[in-house]
Image 1: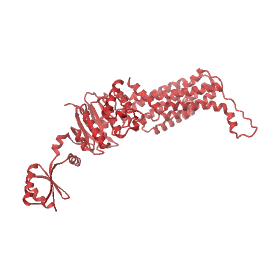
Image 2 (image 1 turned 120 degrees about the horizontal axis):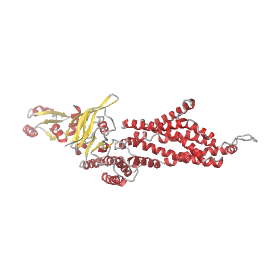
Image 3 (image 1 turned 180 degrees about the vertical axis):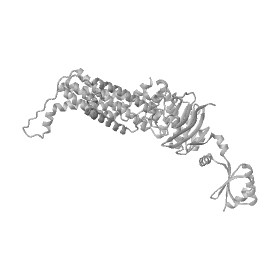
Image 4 (image 1 turned 180 degrees about the horizontal axis):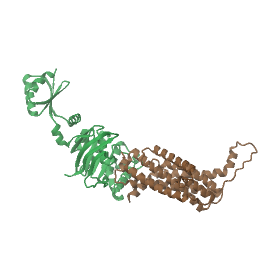
Length: 258
Length: 303
């Protein structure tokens, strides 16, 4: 078995031993399913909880299926992002902090394999959980609201997923020069917030920013047209991820591990 | 005899403070070498530089048969002072994992893991999670992972310091067996351990090698014969008379015990005993001994 697969396989086994393969998909399903259900049953919920004067008429506009999908992606891009950062902020940092990295990296292991195997495993967990969650929500949207063509669903899935992958890659990058998982998590979240604020305030200059991908996804869902700048944002995101990974590897290689 | 590794001008400083101040040594193939020193002498830092975990501030480390820039890590095995493992793995899984990382095939790795689990004596716990291992078991597992790929040089950082007497005994015996197959460099602050299994010694003190050589050379160089005498009453009064009898190197008095360090133990013995019996001095104790290496250690460190 080649070395990269050994490392990758170890990550997958670790994720199943500490139940990440169970709880991360479940969290994504809950986040996803919550939106269509609450939006659909809102009148009944308000009714049941009471608090409104007798005879008050509740009239809420029924949201369109696209709006529900946007709300779901909104959940993924806030709480989902938090989960991604929390599950991967210690992926390298914790191993260095505990000292197990000193045993592993004294063996003839390539630093590139070490980092990319971890990245690939975290990506797999992310995409599987995100896919299961989004499919579950799609099911409820179709049942409770209206049919959304699979192709639209799938395109929005891919588009938004690129942003989530970018977030994950940033977390891995900050792992490469930080020993403390908490610090890694904090920096990543701070940068994500900063990126989102910057690119939405200066959106006409930063149209290629990967952090606008969620906005583009929303536009796409509402208008069913692919916004002009999507391609540049995707390209920047992919190049950004490659650069971040390459930098992670070279920084990590230069780091003293003891 | 060729050297496994040659170290020259090795320095390391942390925040402008020199921790290692220019080490020069080489390790001979097949020997067991003790890196001896007090706490804070720089033993761990030295081993970490040799294993590539720390980058030297200056100087070079050249492994035999490895070109500059080539990966030397396949040649070495390393046990950190406080080994940490993946707690969720079992001992067997961890060994197989490190074996494969070190370049063994899956099959070789499995076989070698079984063999080593047996050798270090934790095969009955091989399927237990490492998180449930005791300190001694972790130490053994650490040794097993260090030698799984049959490295040319095994470096053990304080392998026995944290163990109880039984564990210590067993690990030392394990090292005795490992000596036949590979070169061992291990650090310790306990001289007895070094004396027991080692051929050569490197004395490290405040980041410098203050003494090195084979066990025998050091003994010959530093060991002295001494005669301890204890008399009833004040012993001091006899010192002057006795020290005029033979050539004495040095004298030390501890409470009522007088220790004479001498070159020729036989002459001194006869002369002292004759004098004492002739004059009928009230002798309580007469003991001939050699200075222990512990004394040598102290002497070297105090220099």
